[in-house]
Image 1: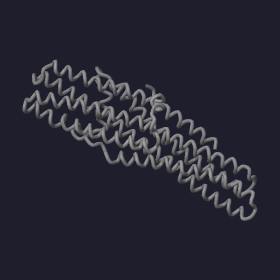
Image 2 (image 1 turned 180 degrees about the vertical axis):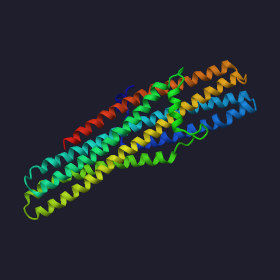
Image 3 (image 1 turned 45 degrees about the vertical axis):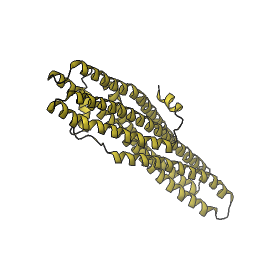
Length: 334
């Protein structure tokens, strides 16, 4: 299923609902990955290498594989919900750009006045601040897309995964210290992302109110100059605050995606480590080869599912990158 097909078929995709779903999936992914970690790096080696309890290890490995499957499903759901929030960010930013552009056009009707000059200056300030925020967003999106491509291309059974493992080594110091993956920061980032979108939409509404107020003040000769200067002052505050919200919204979305991609990479690491353990245990005659073969088929299925599902996320990121480029062009026309 493509991203747009899945997006349009999602009934509950409002900011509040999606933010809650992000939190739930992040918490579940981290919990399931943590449960798998405990068994892979502590319990299984003790059961097989030290105690030679193959039957007990077999049952625990089944639990590990189940936890990894759940974590992979949670991580994909998180990535999809983050992409849905990306759409909300892009829509909010687009609305702000359009209304600022209308104020700029209205300012041009005040030929030769100080107000016209001030609105022109503020419009240029808006362009500069927004271009800075969008440039940062484009750099972040390229980072995200690169790592999604690695997941898509490398999470395929039969590969030696050299590139993937090289990437993972730059992210994780040791295999035994990867469990919690910043649980609380990702929750805070999800909350701030929603706050930023709400802030952008609020400022857009304020700008729309300004658009209605300015013509009224132009018609009223009494104190209209002072009123216009107050409006311009309000517009300046909106522009400064709006640019900050936009930059923060893109950055929070980037951090959430970065953490989610690290979760996915960690799942693949665990699959590879478990496969390596199975290979070692067969060679040492601790486990029957047929039993291990069945386990490895299940591990292959996890990686295949990750690779397949992240084609959808790669498509979502490509859409996001195109939309950011379009916003950049819109800003330049303000």
